[in-house]
Image (cartoon, rainbow, N blue to C red; front, side, top):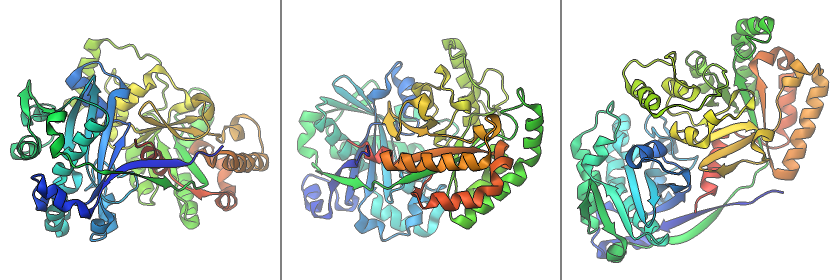
Length: 482
């Protein structure tokens, strides 16, 4: 049964300017916007929560996102809001106009924020031709964000909101970043006191919600329907021969030798067909193939670091502390002894959103807590292992079921014609019942399906719209907004 996804949001339109002004906000800081309350971890949200509060649960974590109103975003090139160098944290989820975000954690009747940031404004020096216009339009990003945070607290019956002082925020900022103290003073101290009454408590600013409710501008509660498109997600597991080194040395050797040529052909055929796929790549291969895959507009995700299945998740606190120090140390290498697959992947790239485990084996080392700690937003595994048929937000992580793959072409002695017939029936059937299907093809088996790939793509394109897993995860995330 298809589930219609409805996204909830709060909206403050242009007609509310005078209301902001009457409550002490400066007019130059106002811009119309939407506020989304998301049941997920923001960038480094779970890691910061554990560092600042100790043991905590994923269900305590929230993220607030501010999107500028369309009346303003149309003034700028739309690609500006998706620029990967400018919008570094990539928290737009496919929607133009994302301006600011904050990580939150609920602790009893108190709501804590851990960081407030705006890539669009704070990184605008990377697009100097728009710097002045962006700063003028969105200089009040933190004012709008703080109002959204207080409204979230009021709606959810929190008594107090705690925001970090500039000193505390600096203490919990990556030391590798070159940040100015003045920026933190403005963001976490001075702007807050322009808007609300707050007292200092142990490194935090404490805001009594009831005492400040007269300063909060209440946004309108609205919702929008996310188009329920018939969606097909084509994935590739790029692993060369590493998945067969110990079980089929001949195939492993052949896959190592032919993988480059096969990847070229896969990308060329998809380019001709106008198809965008999701490439789940081993971390140790990623630096070699990344530019080639991304330049063709495809989505990247990790397929572990070296195709090893982690089974031992019981690390002592002392060892965890040691490994975290090693990760922060300059020159840390994914070859360092003791690092797990997720740690190694994050040393290769820190922003890739998705993870697909080898053989769809979900071990305790791939718990939701560990995925969230390492900043992953979606996790794709077999439909059987996830026990679900459609993508959904589960425990602050988007879970994506993979219905089938091409293993039977290799290990099941199935002829290609039979595999294709079954694959198309499965795709059509899943589209009919749930409106969604994802499947995966391996580069190491490409010699078995690549000669027929053009025809196969032509047949499945008529069954639904092909999307990447980043796109699907973005829709699920916005559809989970409360």
